[in-house]
Amino acid sequence: MRRTAALALALALLLALTACGAAGSQPSEETAAGTGQAGNTELTLWTFPVGGWGNSGTVSTLISAFHRENPGIRVSVKVLDYETGDGEVEAAVENGTLPDLVLEGPERLVANWAARGLMAPLNDLWEEQAAGDIYDSVRGACHDGAGDYYIYPLCMTTHCMAVNRDLFEAAGAWQYIDEQTRTWTTDDFIAAVAALRDHGMERVAAVYCGGQSGDQGTRALVNNLYSGTFTDPEHTRYTTDDERNARALELLAGMDGVVFDPDIVGTDEIEQFCAGELAMAFCWNVFMEVKQSVNDPNLDFDIFPMAFPTDDGNVNLQGGIWGFGVFDNGDEARIEAAKTFIRFMTGSDSQYTRSVLASTYWPVRDMPGIYANDQLMNEYSVFQQYLGDYYQVTPGWAEARTAWWNMLQQVGQGQDAAQALKDFAARANAAAQD
Image (cartoon, rainbow, N blue to C red):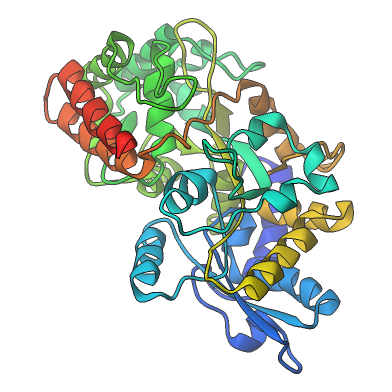
């Protein structure tokens, strides 16, 4: 691996990982809830893999601190993954076994579960002092159209892409990269793919479309190539069915070296990229690099994170916002206990810093110097300036995500891109109106 700073951060995470077993497993009650006499209120937290919060041991360490200050509340933990997590939540809805707390993003907590009446509003938390410092751009994604808040944010990041610098240099494609700004034009992208193909790579890049996992990458790729949009500014309808997005899909479908692969999702693309089978990855962010450093410390090429190519220089990257939500189980005492947990994890600067550092992402309010000595995090911070609109709270989002990868498969099979986008928009907007 090329960067000692990346390895230092990765090894720190590795210590947490190896101390607790594999991510995705459910820890024992003693590990999750701490030792000693049980408290008066028992809560369950389900957390999606939000950086280090997707690891049971990391979460248990944080919860142990909560237990020391709140002995009357005991929290057990279940770590979900993005391949099966939605199904587990839906099964819990059907069975009446939803957890008390969940850590995920507004697209699920606000646009999906709250819209279905499953979440308890958190307006009172937003009226407290600490909430006043949360960025306005984050605040706008945390409430529904009626102004009710259903997520209290913890951290954020900007998703990007990455290229294999070694391959780019060997193929003569590095000339198309602006190393300082980490940007490139659509014409640069076209030229780089051609150079890599001429260098002998059959699969330069993959438009993965086997499911919704990692779809933030394919959406950003398509929208940026010719300045297309995904929704209207008010987040009321989907606007993908225009000639700019069709032009982008036609470009990708016609490029020698770019494949539409219905057999892989974002995690598979990352594996192929890190194995040197692809020259670039569209599903990427800082935690991906940390995770790959842990999984393969002998990774032997230079990963260079990049913004997506644009035709006009105005980059719009997809953001990720994650925070806590509370399922409405009808028990006010447990709902209030869940809010106590959220206050603890996000309240004081010292604890909030620990909570954010565990995520390996960025805070949602000003915390100067939180990564002052971390070269890798400072490197990735360049992408914050390119953060685009957080449109994932548009009604009908769950259906739109499925419709998106279905549409990509159709284009990959030869269907007219403009028609495929028109069908996508009709399906997504019908869901938005339900």
